[in-house]
Amino acid sequence: MNMAAAAFAAFVVIAVGGVAHAGESDQSIRDYLEGDWLVGEKPENGACTGYWYSGTELEFEFRKSSGRMLTFEHFDLFTAVVISRIDRQGDRLSLEAKTRDGGYAPIGKLRILRPDRIEVDPGNGKSAKVAYRCGVPDLAVNTAVPIDKLAKLTPLLSGGFSFIEAVPGIPDADLCRRETSAPAPFRRWLQFELIGPDHYWVFGQGGNFLGRTTIGFDFVRGVQATPQGLKLAMQRHLEAGGGWDVPASRGETYKLTILDHGGRIEIPELAGVFVRCSPADEASRGMHRY
Image (cartoon, rainbow, N blue to C red; front, side, top):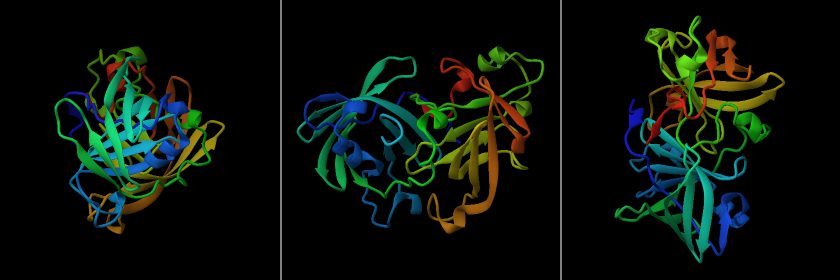
């Protein structure tokens, strides 16, 4: 798995008249961008979740958050970007991201071409490419759960966010700063993608997960809020078939119960307690491109 690439992916932006923060931008633009886009390749074989294309996918979400984008570099790297601002001039959009340290940075420009395509200009002297709409959002997964609950597991932060397993006798602060030599088998970590709107998953490495050494992007089929946290309806993601979510890639179903204890989460099905570190802590960084 390519979990630690170098250099943050400065990638996208969109504009349509005036200047507005992402949370205040035209609803028409938010509706237009929402969903999955395939860069540099026409999705001639159907939606991106049902067929493996070679191009990078850009996935925009506004319904739960005030603006968020996932970049999906096949086959194993997702990077989250929080959109802080969208400037619009005619059919051209410029996007700004909120960085992990609280700053702001441009992430590229978009030009609206047709209802099913946009031009993506990443800047940095790179050539612009056309991105094609590549499916419709799956809103049923999290529609009944408010963003504050979802953000407990999928924080609204640029870059990935993971939870490291607690180790008896080692302070959580030391684990978060990685100032410990605790053996790797006792330091499992998990990352949750519950906002989507097309790809919803759980990823885990570092030890035993239901008899497996890795949770490899298992599908989240449903999210339910509870007084104690969340319940996730899960399905194992098999590395098989010609697409992300096709019959050949769907394994057995199971449940994950998330009990929120503030600085920690407990997952009885995994017989584990995982630490919620601060965004500045090294151990909170999940998969990402920086």
